[in-house]
Amino acid sequence: MDRFQAMATFVRVVDTGSFSAAARQLNVGQPAVSKTIAQLEDRLQVSLLLRSTHGLSPTEAGLRFYERARRAVEEAEEAELEARGAGGGLSGRLRVSAATTFARLHIIPRLPDFLARHPDLEMDVILDDRTIDLIAEGVDVSLRMGALPDSAATARRLASGGRSVVATPGYLARAGHPQVPADLAGHEAVVHSQLSNAWSFQRGGAQVSVAVHGRVRVSAAEGVRAAVLAGMGLTIASDWMFAPELASGAVVKVLADWSLPPLDLWAVFPTGRLASAKAREFAAFVEQALQE
Image (cartoon, rainbow, N blue to C red; front, side, top):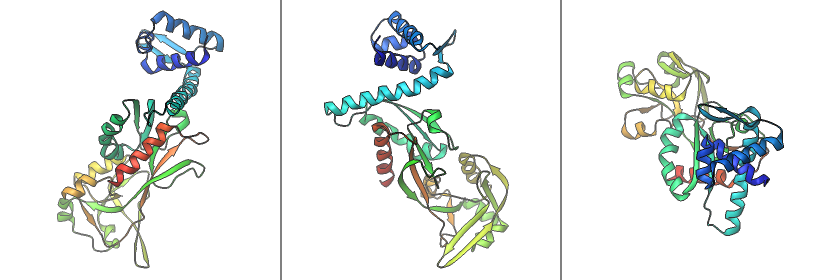
């Protein structure tokens, strides 16, 4: 049994969820696929797949093997492309994670362009505001904002965006316009439950920190955004988060003459691994797209 071909077959079975679908994509008969997987399990002396009426899914050992096998197959495909001088065309599967709101507004709308450049590439886009374990989740590149929690992470800064206090004109008409940061103490603030309610501002050489309060705390950025747009209060956010509404006037900036620390966007790659060509290309694409 060809070990590499067996790994490639197993990866295709997991990706498609069935022997028959994998056989069609590999242009072989289903019995050949079943036999290859059986031989692979026999050689490894472990069960790799759970078989049920609902289809196939990897066992715990199968999932670990899948992640390593997938990367080996993809690296081999990329090596062939480079050797052939294929002009940078990418293939295989790219797994990307990003914060939900940022991805919905700025990444997903740009994916058609990226995929058009690489017609043999498939993508998994994982939307999650949490900092996830890239290796455990099999993620090739994660787009993260803010300070990196892991100083040892392999990361590339893609952009630096402004931050502002924003609110709807309707809310400000009811509650008034804050003139100085201290005025925020008397306003309703929509606060992300995982972030501090102490907002720090700078102007000239002065630095001011204000503890804000609101009746609503939200556990996800998408919820903060929705609450602000509903006129429930003001919030501090990246300009990326409210880009369409800032452009249309649906929300406006408050205390614009006071500055807030910028928010960096990073492409983070699994620690201890060489970033794949697909991950590097996607990071470069996002960096360029945000400059346009």
